[in-house]
Length: 589
Image (tube, rainbow, N blue to C red; front, top):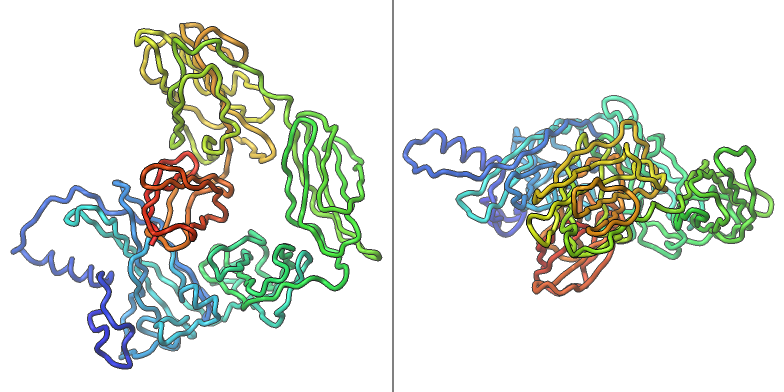
């Protein structure tokens, strides 16, 4: 942007930005490589690695999002710049989306966010897909666009800083626009509303979008809440907005392609209360407080409904027990331990009723895993347990139950072929022999069996006991089950048992959560931030702690929808600790 502020009415902005365009970097490198008069220095820092970027075909006149996935061997803080790199065949003075060559989108300063919306999301939320003043416009004609993401590693030593880039092709098709049908400006809270959108052949080649995701926001896109994770891209879907949105005039709905990059957003919708009973299949089913003999089940309240019919049974039975309810919740008692139950629910008005929900399932817990503890930790105890990125240090104890501590939850992915476990003992005397064993209750039946043993070392003076284990093949993930890991350390050279009491050592129990997703390191962005911190690879409900620069705990909360609201903070430096990860330094602007 070397001509910023000197071209009169054609100015994009008043001042130059303090960074090089991706193409300028390429030109500089090409020129330097042709010279021999410079002085070379060794650069030990490695460039970032960028995963391959796929090409997509999108409908015309439609917003889209591009995202890069990059890593850095030295764990430097990465920043991203997305830029369109198409040369114009003639002078382009304003972007209006009708040009078939040149750039339709301007360059913006590097950001820690690996995503960029085209146009920027604030424009899309306002219904502005073409802005001459912002120099951003969706293409309104069929054409090919080429984008480059430049990833900078921002090494603290300037001479060591490295840059990588990758290109991505976006083809604009002849169909479009993909947009949310905005004929209806009022939705009812708590009941089914028909949301429609223009498919414009995007469910066919070359777009190939068979399913879409539907979300809503009430704050202009700061936080998106999922309504439907996936639904057919057929142009219509019944959606139920929570009763809590009643009275909202800022709710907007988003329909985004699955397996492609384009999306559309509705204008603001008024959420009002139904004027009469409307039967709707209950949604928002939640099963919680599961014990060996009870469970609590709830769902989203439906306004003006007469009553609900709730049915449940043991999975092995053929006949349901039916209960009529006035409230959208029920507590089941006198259930059998370690038993699977099926349930379903429907809503009723005075003269009509909805269909039942699909059958949902939960399993009661066993009475409990067997007890185990030592009588003394004077001779030896467990100082640290590590499984891949999970790490927990603790002090002397005969038994430590960490299963209720959300900061000490072990997440394991079914996609992980093998895991390494490391146990560090603390001995009163370096020559003290210890035996260490570990088990994971993979099937959640409440028993630590021989086949579930992941570690077994007897009579060792090693400073660390290391082993590896794999998850059972064809393992089923059931979120209603409670899985535990038990680590037992016993002073001496006898073999450790999974249950019972022994004279000296320690036993530790942990909660384990299994997932189908790959477990990757937690990332936060932007940093510095203004109001919100975004996260990646963090499960909803994960607890975070916020400390000031001196280490004083200021606040504890939970990550929801990969966002943390820190708008209440003063401008300063803080330490953010998410789950059992190491603390991250963040700066409030």
